[in-house]
Amino acid sequence: MEPVSKFIHEAHSGEAAPGVQRIDVDAVSSKELRSYYASRQPIYPKRAHGTFRSVKWIVMAVTLGIYYLLPWIRWHRGPGLPDQAFLLDFANQRLYFGPIEIWPQELYFITGILIVSALGLFLVTSLAGRMWCGYTCPQTVWTDLMIAVERFWQGDRNARMRLDHSSWTFEKIWKKTATHATWLAIGLATGGVLVFYFRDAPTLARELLTGEAPVVAYVFMGLFAFTTYLLGGIAREQVCIYMCPWPRIQAAMFDADSLIVSYKGYRGEPRGPHKKGQTWDNRGDCVDCKACVAVCPMGIDIRDGVQLECIQCALCIDACNDIMGKVDRPRGLIAYDTFRNLDATDASERRPVRFVRPRTVLYSTLIAIVLGIMGWAWMTRSAVEVSVIADRNPLFVKLSDGGIRNGYTLKILNKRHAAQRFSVSVDGIAGTEVAIVGHEARNGPESDIVVDADAVRALKVYVTVPLGAKAGLSGGSTPLSFVVTDLESGAQVIRDAAFRSPGP
Image (cartoon, helix red, strand yellow):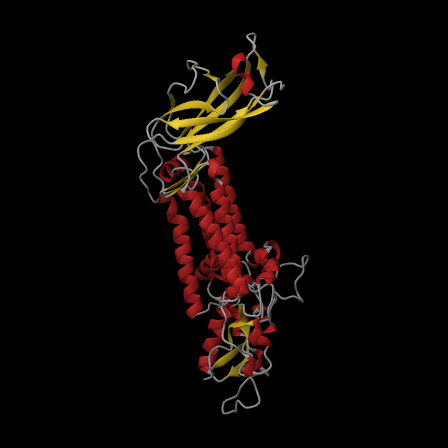
């Protein structure tokens, strides 16, 4: 067994500055080292302290809290309706979001939400780079959680490296077992909560514990548990570098005024250790302590410039600001800055951040337009939907008395939570006779048709043009309209159709 010290890359190789140890750590993820075939090099991120680390803890707590608790929130909708606030009820073809209920015929609202989400991501990226990746992406949130668990059981960077390269002692076995068991428990909780979004959470939880849940619930819970364990605990940064397409797309959203986490080379170079009593003249503020590399969960060196691997979590900012405080230099050597300022050759060329610019205005305008369309569609949505499908075989039937008959399938969707009464009539051709299977035929409106609450009723409708009314037909296809009237409110829904005939 080779000595453990050989593997401790954080062995201190002297002081980078008075009171600041230089960490002997190398960036394992960079453009030069990126390979689709090389084995993964483990990354041991050191715990960071500071403003951005605190923000990430808060974001993690809020996002995980929302995810794990949302299925348990109740929302009373009335008798016979689910009382889960957020429910994707595929079995009954409903999506519930608090007071909002979306039917399959209204999935264009989901399309609108996805479009707004994409445009919002474009806007955030153009303003502040990969802030989504660094703070709220599920991969980042769960990986952060898994690293926190690993640090809890195994210790910080040095301790984890020593443990990995030591012999398989009892201490190593129990610490590794506890870590992976906790990861699996988190994965199981994640998978279990996810299936609760598709069925009443308390009921499904009880069924899962008693073995009465559907097999598909166990299958998907196991699948989600495994993927959470694998992607968050094992793969980690590999997901962001190799699996996620966003790092390769994001460059199209950047412009010269986009904020990115960056190293200010114009201030930090030339870098090097700083000794006590040494002047800061003719040198940069960077003491080359590599604290920024040690805390990076992606294993990069931010001083190498903008990189695909960087998720802009800003932990390197916290690490660098801590060091700058110790050496009594201004904070912000690593900070959010724009491409324009980084490329500036002189301080006079650097400009304040411009948040209002053509790109951000375009994205904001598109978001407002889509939200406006969705708002208008929601305000004008009807509680009754009607569809008419004409028979295709045969297109029409010649009756023995010389009349012509067409068949239609009329579907009435009642979105209200109470049964409703409707009448059906046809307009556009004088003298037509309407017959609905199961109802008495008459000229004019058909007798009351009851549609149950939250239900669709399909009706077979025959429209006949008698011999004496054939003069009202025009060619082989004559326009006509079906009028469905709500007998309680008087509201009408009109659907256009065509009456087929042999022609002149």
